[in-house]
Amino acid sequence: TNPEPRTGARARCWVWLRTSGSWTTLIGIMNPTLFRLIVLAAIALPLFGAVADFLFPTLLSPGLSQAVEAEPVPKAFGSTTGLLLLGTWTLACVGGVVGLFMFRPWARTLTLWLTVVSLAIYPLLGSTVHSWLSSALVESGAMAWGAMLAFAYSEPIKSYFQRKPREA
Image (cartoon, rainbow, N blue to C red; front, side, top):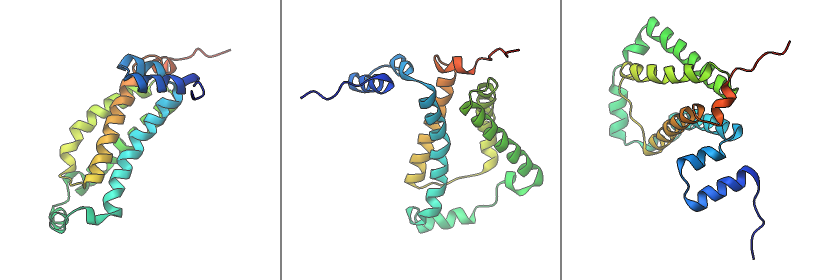
């Protein structure tokens, strides 16, 4: 027996999965709802990864946990200036993500530049140690972040960020 025929975006996604489609086919099924899900995944996955090591401390060996505790506080967290800069950067990131979610014209550029600035900030944050679970979630979030940026600059999502003329 044949299953019911699929329609709409769900059908296009199913066809892409069945035929091992290409990047251009994946862009073809992209819509605002799917883009917003990717934005949420890009934020939620790393947050879950950060929480995972606190919820499941036994995922790290005792020796590794002790070594992490013995590390000095990174310079960025040890000064008021560093904390203010990190706080400003964090608020800008939140604003950029909210702007992407709401398809604001400035959000793509802001988020792209914040991504570049993030790479410069990483050395100030010091060493980090993650469990396998946390690493998997953080890396998946990084991939979702990259996909989010790529889709934001590709059609059909790109058109949602265009300025719309105001009605008089």
